[in-house]
Image (cartoon, rainbow, N blue to C red; front, side, top):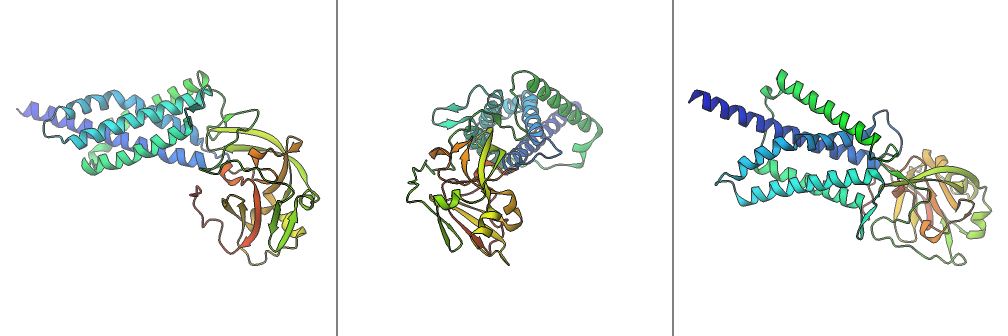
Length: 340
């Protein structure tokens, strides 16, 4: 009897550790995914590689979790809702990992009306919600014994295995990607945030309100423009390096006589109502552009004028700009991702 109880205890202990490891890996994958999808500059830490390794580590743990799940599903007292939640979580994790891996090959961008990245992110968010529900109904708390020498060695082995599989994937099926995980394209796609459809703006009627000044398109084109190269890196999973023609916001506002003394940011608003706030110190590194690739902007890319903000993800690059005005609102006092 003592041997049997000891064996059962060891099995339960192993199941607990697998659950804790899976929970930690899913959270790590979620956090690094959000960071890689938000940050537009290259960090010393390769976030997308950590993100991929965490996801592949989940797959490596899957055989052990299957054994635990089968044992749990056979228990007659286990509620149907708990079983359904566990199965839902497993399905969402598999969908998240599969869409991420397929996207990294660059061979498929859409499934029906949705991009692979939209499915990937949506499934990941749903998986995190299911994970929270799983731990709420089946609490698994860390213990000191979980960090013994054998557990640490196994965790290190899992990490090394995930890193090796990630490296093999990157040298095999995966295509070359930017540090954000975005797949390079020769020409940028036409995308918008949520329900902002392409606007066909009449250039003759269009006006840019800069503070109290009102500029027509001819006046904007007469501002001191520069030609420069910048990478548009969209959160839908692609990036494209293009030549742009535009004027720095600092120059535009100074030329228009817009005072910034004591102001904390500048609000840039689209004809759609979409807006982002840029801190005053950043205005020398943000452009209002009127051309791409030596030509006027196409309607889908913001004609007659859009924002180009190198080092920031695509949702900062406001299209169809209609207003630029000083604001007392700090630039950090806005959601990381726009909510409207």
